[in-house]
Length: 218
Image (tube, rainbow, N blue to C red; front, side, top):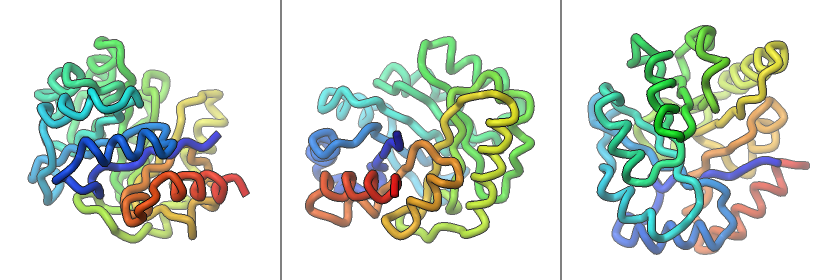
C-alpha cells in the first residue's frame, strides 16, 4: 500500500499546528518535516522547538529530513522533539554507517537521502542497516519544483538493487510528484510519496490525499 507523506514545507507557517491537524484528519500516513540549514541547501526552515510544538497535534509518525551540513550535531535534538525517523544525506557524511547506527541507537528509524546527481553506490555498504532510502527527484531547497525525468530510472535501479539483494526497505520519493506522475513513480518502485505543493494547494487536503492514493494504484 502506497503511503502519502505530506511535506509541511508547503504549509501555511502562520498556522502550522492547524495545518498538521488538517493532514492528520485528511488521512496522511506520515508527516514529512524538511529541516534546512541555509548551507547544504539554499533555504532555512525550522528547528527542534517547532517540531516539539506540533508534536502534540498528531500521533502520526514524524519523518524528519535533515538537509544540513552537520546533521550529527542535531540528530538527538530532533529525536527528543518527537521525530520517529531521521533521514540524513549521504553527501555530507564521511562516516555514513556510523551515522545510521547512531540514529538507530535512539530506537527510531534511520534513512539516507540522495540528491539527484548522487549515485546509488554510496549506499552499497549501508543497505543492510538502513530503514528507508529517500530519492530526491528535485534539487532540494525549495518546494514546488518540477520532477526531474531521469530520476524515474534511478528509482527503478534502486528497486532492482533492493529486489536482487532480498531486502525490503521502503523507497521514499520527494519532489514534483502529483496526480500526473504518481502512478509511474509507484510503478518504478516507490513506496512512500512525499507531496507538498500537490497537497497544500487545495483547501481539501483529504480529497487530494485520497486522489493521490487512488491514482497511484491504477
